[in-house]
Length: 211
Picture (cartoon, one colour):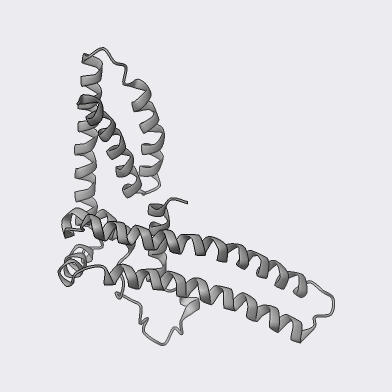
């Protein structure tokens, strides 16, 4: 799993599900963290430095590795619990012990992901956090518009790069086809950050070949 995809998935941890908290109490996590996807999309607008981006990605990579391990553990413990439940006569002590193992794994997953969100938040300056809150006020509509505009501009730059190749006698169709196969599905699934990364790779290729 790519780091950016993993960060996007982590956005769901910013809001605990109703099953994870009493309905009568306010969610203490509400508004406390910033969805990683929002941070990556707004990187240019909040002045996210390369050092900050690298720190976020490094922590995410470390978390992702452990998360994969815990996913396997969860599957194993869930299967074991299911096997006990299917018995004609359930041994209560054994069932509760196995249930505790499953809960322990789930707890570690939540600790892991929340720890990452804390680390990401702490890597941002107060000014960057204030800017992110402003960008999120309208539900991210203004940010989404800015991202669409930036992507449109990069698509035009890709077209210009392809035209330069064509004018010089090189066939850009293979590069454009490979980009289209990745870019379009990413955009359709709402993965703007990864889609932009694909555009950046193509632009980088055109820039290198132009030297």
